[in-house]
Image (cartoon, rainbow, N blue to C red):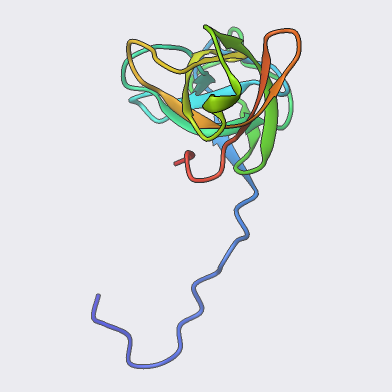
Length: 137
């Protein structure tokens, strides 16, 4: 397509909530960290190669027994959320980037480096608040 020569309606969408096709046999729980795999389907976050973080599940969706894309799940693309933390954290870790261990746990380092957020607050009970803005695709 050629460059614009006049106004263009680009159908802007705020992007806070997006819908993704769920992977066959995947179960997504509300509040889970979620990724798309190398085929583009939504799966729970984990420390698995070739995942790309997309956000936090807005709802629970069970695609057990379903084909790829048989179900869709809405995903929150920005904000701050509380998850369990793996490893030792100190106040000096505010601002540190964390990676997915599971759909409910983050760590400062991991094997596959699936970045999911930035630490904004340390909480009691081995939990951390992370901000996901700028880490979702």
